[in-house]
Length: 380
Image (tube, rainbow, N blue to C red):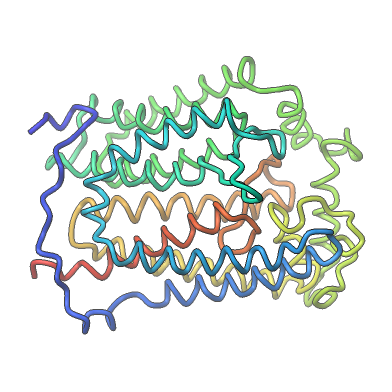
């Protein structure tokens, strides 16, 4: 067996995974119910937001949801221990895909991060999140000590930094940033000393300064500057935030009604079926509608936390925490973005925003989490 401080740990022992069908009744089905409710709201909002566009995004999203539900069932059917056993080759393949997309991919939204498969665009960075969470869960589950050794912490950070760096080169800073909460959540649960966290924070600030100076393109710096002073460029980089704020504010308490939002129907609001879909929902259904959606997200995360707390082993806990932290940060950042609290980046809203790769990621992650909950009875 390799040392736990190395980048590759030995395959985890596979338990006798034969939980009874009766155990299905004990799964946190509230997790699935919240996801399906959010998906239904997302489909309705995509239909409204894309009504005036030339492409039928609603039908496309409906297909992706169908494919995602099938992928969720498949992910649930496979033991997560089996997937953890294949996580290293999957991790390597994800790095290869991220490198190839820089050469063979096509550009959309200012980033060369998609492969074209006929009329379908595939974004490898989305799948890299899931695969990195799998491999990191396997790696961090190996030690039996309460606190992680320093070498293992640095190795774990390096494992996350590799896909992040490739995604930064696309450039997609928002997509790369989504790996940070995943790594932070998993490391905290695995066991990290406070001084290590402070050192990591300092290193992160230093890295941010280097990225600002060397890694960011002019339009990306402009987005950050516009966030700090949005009134300086109301028709340029600040246009999206300005229109989003108008949409959110005009919805007031109960909204203007389904399909009646002027910002979306008159095409003032950019990316209204993807990154700014929450603005459309706020304009049409108001504060009450947004509140209902946020309650569904809260329900999803509460059920996810319950799954993590009763998982049968360290690997299951870490996997659920990693996927949950990424999910939560997507919701937090996108919600803050549409009201101008953080810079605009391509961060979609889980189960609501249009997007094939992201929709598949959400459903596969949900299937894995439900699988962790189902298999907590193994060997008991």
